[in-house]
Length: 438
Image 1 (cartoon, rainbow, N blue to C red):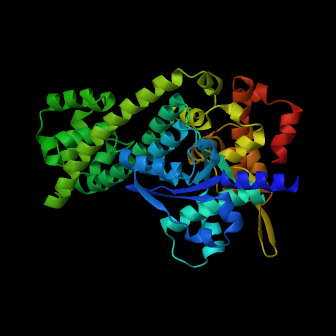
Image 2: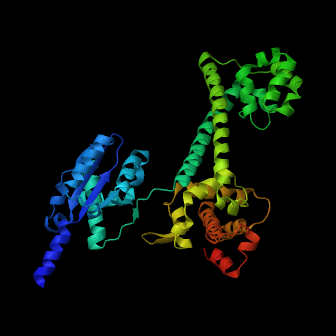
């Protein structure tokens, strides 16, 4: 009996392999270390030879041959990699999943901490990180040391496309905002009186188009009034088109300074840049609206105050299938607004986790900020915020509780299929006590 048990263990050790993959742009680094080597080889795993292969078809063939050299049974492997590869790792992830390899994702902080424990102050290298990831696999599966390893799964195509568009819109807004700030500064020098004509903003589409066609106050003053009126009308500045006389008067009396050649070039470039990107953003938002309008989840959430198709599209796409979360706490933790205990010597205080899905975390905060700080009416989110503030918390500590409450409400709607209605859906005493307890 004993010999049979030993043979069984030896067979298991010979058929189990751990793979660590460090994602790169031009090349990836991978290492395979067997269970037997971990259990009987002492520290030799630290010197395991790694494979550096190109992130191309020929490189993947080398990687496949490398894996097959250990075992042609794909189920004999447990792989691990970090999620920071982004697009760099997308093709490799798809390649591994297509071949049914068991691949997990691990946080960078986990790899960093384990690397420090094992290798101390040795410089970080791709080879070391790959070996550390195999060690994490072994400790997690065999020794029972707990690590948060997430299964690598491909998002549904409709969710991936919608989330990518929403993220692109957010990045585009950032780029446009920086350009608008620079444009506003230049206008303050070239035509400072323009802000009294376009009182909302001198960097919106109409004034940008105006200065793109008439780059100085002198050119605006010398333009034909009817032509200028028609131009503003085409720019959809209908109210301003009726005040052309006022605009030309401001231009004639302007104290603006003609920019030097460098600033003149920048003004011209910024006007062209903003006009092109305003059009791109309009087209992008239009595409997002079409996709969001086709989702059944949108109908459940569309009544959430201070949201648009873009914000709700981000929530829907980043959340994905709500049924992948077993309970409410899992979803709130996934968002990143789950309270965690922070201990530092004699100091004990509760703070919100810094982890979570960044897109969801940012979107929930944007909605909550409008509900708490800009909504003129009373609402449960504002009441919760004020209650947390009255407990002596700062706004930065109170706001995550509001975001968590909003996430719980969204979870309820998506899970039950009920329309969002704060006065009806969440009136129950049970939910009220849950909201207050957090």
